[in-house]
Length: 276
Image (cartoon, rainbow, N blue to C red; front, side, top):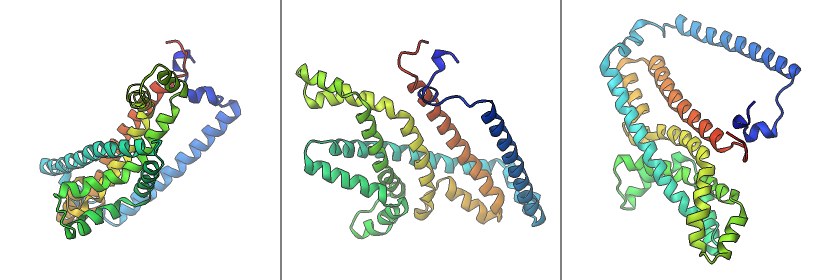
């Protein structure tokens, strides 16, 4: 293995030996056989019950079906993107408050972070959907799903950002202060830019959770991918086929996000000093 390809994980863990490799191959083969048998039984059961009949799959030969699903996917991605931006902005403020030297501000920020992390996304959605209008806060359907998803993710993102700040060597902060720089300048110019680079992989991984949370859009009848899938099921009575195709779309998007996260992590976690 070349030095350029060495990562922190490679440096911390030894490569498996011959016996371990044999065990890994054995259990991999056994797992694949069991998985294949399980898939065969599931498909056979679907065949016996008639779920594989052409009438349940013919709708995917029509361009209108894919356009309808694409419209729902566009709605899902829009909610996920805006939620991520809003979540990051809220998380940044909560993170700054938590690391503040002011104990009251730090305590309030900590409480908000724990509140965000502890309340399920669905309860946030019900609040904006049922309670907020009674308080005079009437929001468009888009924001009834976007804000709850953002608030639910904000606490986790805040802790991710804080872990990045804590990962920046304290010596850099001390050196900057010794040079006469203000605390705010040290944070914005030196600490946070490095912290952000450290946590980029974790932030990308959090996008997967945000994307999954958008499936609650059915509560507010927002036209996302899942809601449009439910419409297709209602119109064509094709439960298995529609949910299977929808699941494959979600899996593909999450797979791409995970691959992006791994790629960034490998790039960022290269052992310092390794030659390229």
